[in-house]
Image 1 (cartoon, rainbow, N blue to C red):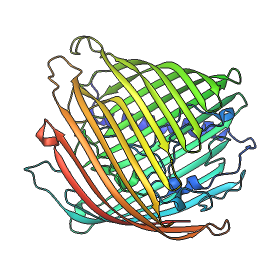
Image 2 (cartoon, rainbow, N blue to C red):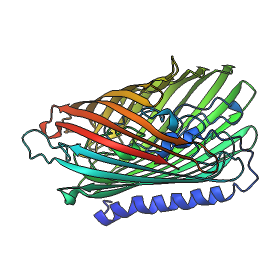
Image 3 (cartoon, rainbow, N blue to C red):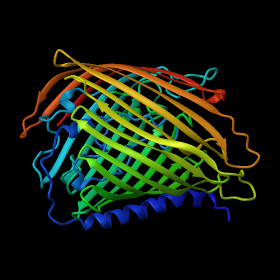
Image 4 (spheres, helix red, strand yellow):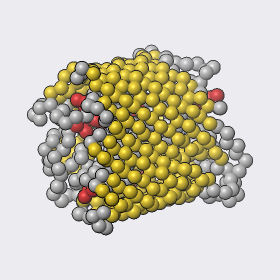
Length: 489
């Protein structure tokens, strides 16, 4: 039976509310005394500037409380999912111990505040394609962030509960019709029962505009464009993630996860939902290396005419942390996807490779090299009856000069390949998106006192990004020049 438009809109909202209540009920049970370790306060700075919503890029190396699968950092639901390790592009005052934004005292209520202010000139604020009217303007981005928590809220290896909230206010000088406010909220908690560790995360993202650049960016304003839509739109994202790890022996453990996500676009686009779960068997040959093999499956469904799409995968992964200078996480596998509508869906199974990659390398003092990438399948929000496989890679280099100056450059590439999910739909769209962003930051003040921590930096950047699509309406070229000031308390 076909739902009405009102039903289609209310369904994601009702489910999100129910998931939130379930999450709060589970967290309320985590009332036993926590056994948190001393907190490395550097991580508070890592994500307080720009989002204050951290998610570790690599699993921690303390396997006694190891959670092999962590929720991915907040990212746009479709299109370019280019994301960076948390420390990329930040001066060390924001990523090294001593500049406390959250109290380092364990087993206590902890909090942190930050403020990021940017002034940006953008020559294509709507990502208009060639031949269409382009709007250029200056805008001011104001992004406060607050983090509240109890327990090991930064190390995430002991027990903890944490709430983060980071709004983003954009004020345009000449085109006030584009003024917007976005919201990122994350509530998360973890409890270690000894051999068993559970964690639960609830994300809520209220997004508007062309992308989520300053909301997700940490330090640099690298843009994460929604290439699938390639224009201004509204989308609300609700994501609930439950992870578990159970040690069988000192060298082996099982890990599993389940995630339910809603991508609720405005009524002119295609909303979708997804449930996915994984189960891995993991082996630790050394304290620095973890090998895992397993599989997963789930179902993805969207607004009509998009058919239901059950899928499964077989995966292997490696986590390696040789020294304090090298960290590596690689997952690769094969996904098999079907389309549940015998009368209209395309025949056969769509098979594709999937992967995730995260790496950091610090060859010298003051030098940081990062690499990230992934390949996955997503439901198109703009083309009915079509999905797309996106493949991306992003790399960055940051170098310290004269103790207080930090230069960096980040570049990324994504390829999107669309395919049909319905009989009679000819899916031929392909997109190639790339960006490059050089930046310079200067630490002007750093007071790491535990009684009154405070830090400040100023910086400037240039961002060029463009998309080349065989559908001309999705082409765009965009340039931004910005200055920024960061304050962490």
